[in-house]
Image (cartoon, rainbow, N blue to C red; front, side, top):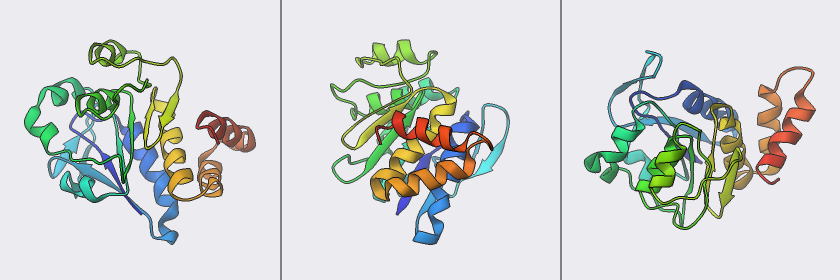
Length: 196
């Protein structure tokens, strides 16, 4: 499985890195989650500069695509040239977005009439884009999922693991990163949040 984690300038490290760590727990089964960017380097909202593992073209052929958030997402949502480079197909891909990434999903026309989750800052912009926002951390319909809040990133990753792998794969990845002494309750809570 190939997963693109769309990561733009001004990105939130939690969104991209947590998803990457969880999904790459499946490397032994041939999975690879790649930080996928519109340029060779991007700098996070906190000044961390990273190298892209893949270009945006990679997303078109990926089995799953996760769109993280960032402080420049509104600018990206207005950039028709950049949006035009993001070619996704919900008929053959799992597509998820977190926080302001939900705004990009809306602008790409991928949410349709479905309700979605986002963070509190982005909520008015997502509503303005014509999407009904849910007051919950995760929601999925078919091949599209959205999450709200930085620490909802494990939910998106677990959803991909459960859908493209198995429920046991999702549970094992979550168990690995869960706090000691809270592993069972953390995994149960996360799996309940994604409907598993």
